[in-house]
Image (cartoon, rainbow, N blue to C red; front, side):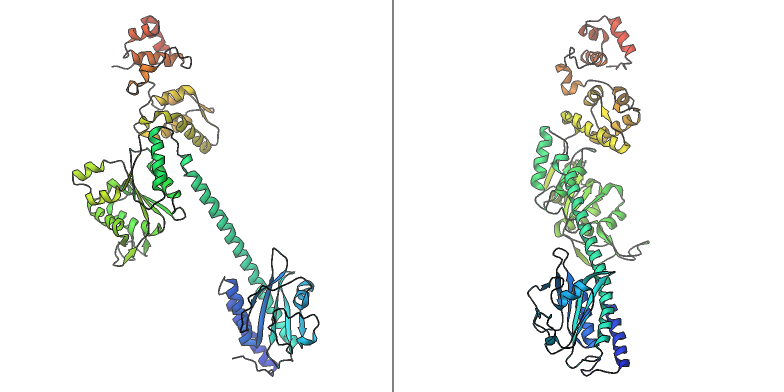
Length: 515
């Protein structure tokens, strides 16, 4: 029911109605960031509190510069077609162009009235006021008093101008929120493209046959929700492959949540993965979602899965089989939709044989195994990997870094039991010991890497001691390797006397190996 009758009330009643309606309008404007919903609430408050029917809000369309009808209130039939006004066109367009309010006692007597909406009573009054942001007119607020109200129209005008000012502030806030949302979406998309590029297949280095086989397997498995078990020695890049699987899968828009199972004791591991309820244990002051719930719709990467205890293996098996869990201290079953990618350096088959790893969990994890080769089985990739790592280290240190050919040859002849991680640590140590921009052989040797040619890879037999790319030190070492570190035999290979090679060993600072 309206607070005002059709015939009008006293000025005191009108003032009370205005104050109450302004209060309701301010509540509506502060209630929601949904602009359409807010405008509808404002026009409803005007109808209920001030007997203003057929309220209309029109706002300037940024693209066209026209005044576009955004919302109409108080009509039985929905206005479906888009209605707009050019500046200066009709009463509404005139308000936009001049920035002044227009009050009409009888619509049918106003020649500028276009009646495009077809919703107003032609014998009724009309009040239209500009919506401003500072000095700029951004829209028009219009309404028609209920039939019979012809008095105090100037007061209605003044009141609507106050409401229009509030709407203008709301429009500005709504536009700022929309702009921030667009910027956040754009930033999110840029980050997604960056992450996808960072973890794309093209950025995983390796051109040897074992690595090409891995890439092909990753491309195939990334398409599906199959559980993946990544096998390989420590430092072979298992987490990098897990990232590639996630960011090239349909779940790439979801979260990629990772946890090193060896880094936490069993009690904390269960809470981290499954979450806990408030009061579940000392320090649990609030409910907390675990990694599985955090990864809803995405991927969980469980590194070092072979380190979990037998009792926890049973709890993990339930998640993999049923897709459900219970938080620590809770009784409610929580359903989760996640893909599991696990990794281990352990021989799980041997662990199963010895009873340390559940056979049913093993088969649940080992749906799609990926075996990453150690670095010593893909030595041809070392130059490219080393140069990539040197560029990365140089970027971190804020200087350009390069690697000499002699330093690279030393790296090519090391066994790398720690794989790529050991290689990266070696290069970082060498960079610290390099004052200039070139990491040379001496800097590599200072890290503790032995200068040798390994016969186990068939390099010695094929090495040409007359190769012009080898410097004198490398030739002497290669000859010593081929001669089993017998100096007299190595001297014959180099057409030297034993005395000459002994002198070279001393002056070139070659550490003699005992075979």
